Length: 243
Ligand code: ADP
Ligand code: MG
Image (cartoon, rainbow, N blue to C red):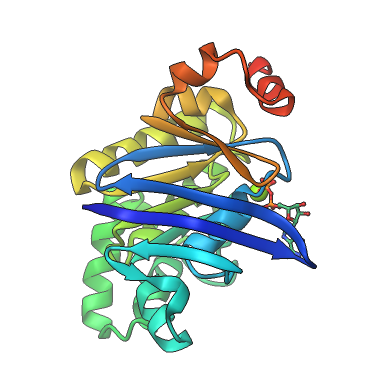
């Protein structure tokens, strides 16, 4: 069964459509890349997948449940099943590493003892066991993103959505973060959708690639098929030629 099934999804801002009839499925344990020119609608699609944007039309079925039809309270619960990782980490600067990772667990109503044990486990998973009492400002970019990943995994989601998660990082930290995500994918069978504008990241990391161009899904398949195709839209071809 698919972890995620998107069908006939439309979304617009001020009557101008930015997602046009998007349909695709993601199977459990897959790593799917999402690429496309700037402004293509990648972030909007990711936000629609976790219910942060309400689409005009279409369905987003996460583990059998259409999240577009849920009331706010049920949606909040469903959202605990999705981890989000952002380009700029979105950490709370006045909280320690451990407190940042604990935040989603607090919101989910965990006891403080359970939180402590879970945070320890998560920080060990991302290789930050020694840094739990530090503040974000004391960490490197790569370490901050590890905190972001630990926080995203706190509620043991079935789907991890990463929006340009490595775009603010140097090449070395990018490799380290991608290795960590691959490792987590293998260990936990976690399904990952990763937005990036870096083709190299897609080549190294994704098993399948979705390509958005002006709100349309213009490719859903192997990266090689995309690279060897002769009828790519100009903006997509330019993206492929960049690297
Ligand atoms: P990408 O992530 O591929 O660069 P986005 O999903 O951020 O693209 O944006 C797609 C289009 O929607 C762009 O034209 C952008 O200007 C527009 N857009 C995104 N968010 C909003 C918003 N909150 N209000 C109005 N327009 C938006
Ligand atoms: Mg974006």
